[in-house]
Length: 282
Image 1 (cartoon, rainbow, N blue to C red):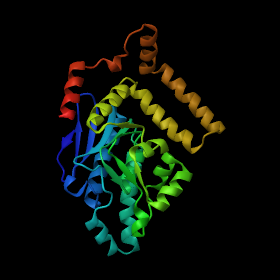
Image 2 (image 1 turned 60 degrees about the vertical axis):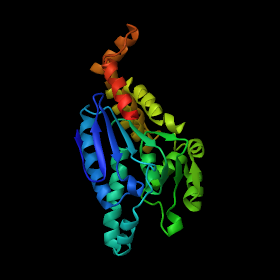
Image 3 (image 1 turned 45 degrees about the horizontal axis):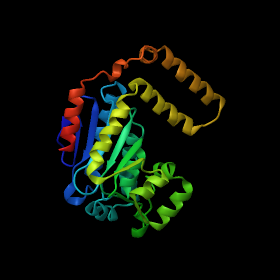
Image 4 (image 1 turned 30 degrees about the vertical axis):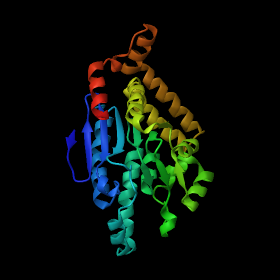
């Protein structure tokens, strides 16, 4: 799975890791309607590939100094000329991007090496795990130009909580990486030169898990978040664990545990894993 569109790349390595990369470093990876359309196309492919097990995890990253400066200035100028219906249609495409990233069946990891402003905070919040450089900065900057972080608000508020969301969405303060970690937006902060190594360490951890169990767990957690405590949710949780216990991967996982061996899904070519990690760091 590899192609070379104008503003982004999608590559799949031998481990089943998909690398979705914003590739507009000359404008700090700002996104416009063209980039959003590309990313939505990539996500459609990833939903299928992750659902059938071809993709084990997705890493969202970008080239250059900044993760993403948010909305592209030229795009924003064009939006000024749109009427309400035009703006609504445009916003729905961005909403589709956030929803598509948030609901990918497999684990997702966001690699943030620098500034993540505006909608880019939403991209990070939609990923399951965020690994950030010590140089990373985050900002919900919309109110400074008379707008609102509307489309991304459900995801960012879920990550940092409603009380902190009120502060940062209204003040447009810049959060450094440790502050973002304290708020729950970032899971790990790494030295800038160690960022790729930190990403690879997390990927190794994810690859140790059962692909089927990770997909089932991610779907289950989304369901539990919608309705935390109800008879239907309790029954659903019972069915999920029961289905996993009798599945092939569940049986393999239990057998490998009692036999004190590695489960089949972890028995990949370690030399190839090391080669991939070296290529990503170079």
